[in-house]
Length: 237
Image (cartoon, rainbow, N blue to C red; front, top):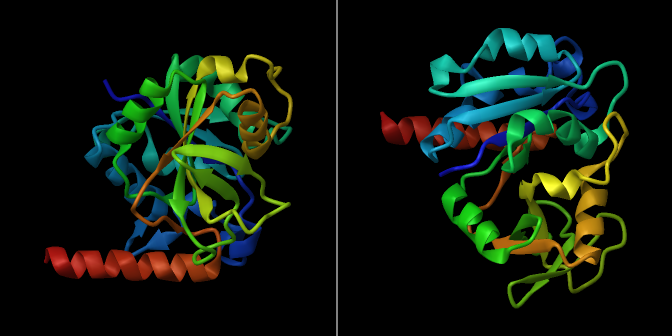
């Protein structure tokens, strides 16, 4: 059975302004459809049918467009940040009641064309509380931040890099709800910090994916993703 997915779509998207001054990043147009439509279609093609959108900035606009997810063959529910921004980890903590015992987490600006079932199977086989997918990036698409060796994450740090870091956090994680047990509801925490804590406890598995990631967090990333979708549309026509 495939697990539900939490999509972190509550950010302010400052790097995409002025595009995102009136709309959230998830609704930025890509080839005639909002970015989130491409995300949801990809998840559905991987057998996923249950999505929780963790929203904040202009989240009501996302809810108006996506609704209950029926148009995508999904069940979609919403967890709103509220007055205080909770960070990526805090947003997931708020949504735990909708996510069950195990779930995927991905970012609202990421398009990740990998094998989600294979990722989930690896997580279950690991017996750990969490799993981070990694990609051998070699500094190509963003700054590499993971030392991954012999199937294990040795080090993960976004600020203190080392030459051994040839991989990058791909943007797709899997968690058991117990991973968030020590995080009080309503408190602020970034997912990166939680990953580091779990790694220190020996509770973070790693899984290398061969497919590169795409993101729309920057203008350059958005244009690259648009080119991908245009090429895909031509190939399918």
